Length: 162
Picture (tube, rainbow, N blue to C red):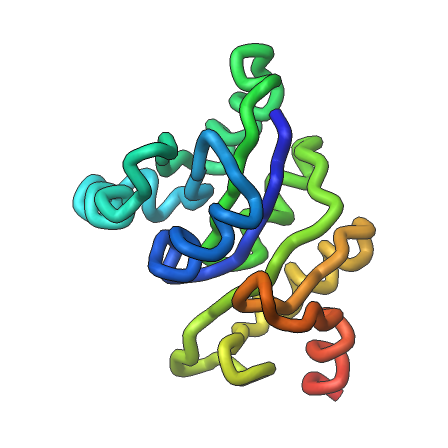
């Protein structure tokens, strides 16, 4: 499995993903890795309904993604992974899925979240997960669109949390 892009964007598949990221990183599959989405048939159907026709799209649990990552069936596939937040990425990494870099695109503001950038607001649990990813050597890149300047998200996070 060749992971072309691992991206956190709680909107999952939307205009930016379809028009910009898929053109920059052509993939055969888009996989939403989220226990919550994979276990909610209505949400899964809605999210996957907007996937481009030329790309296979699925929503899977973290455990199923680990199995797929280790399966010879997908070894030649180019993949885009989409996540709602960093917690599921930590779970993947702890089970041996290698991700050198994660693109942090968007996490909406909600109650009990701290705004880190215009597009990213995080909970305390997400802050802990981002720290763990950093400690695991995963580069955290803040960039909404491919044409935007890449920013070290972990530095932004540390500056805001101080």
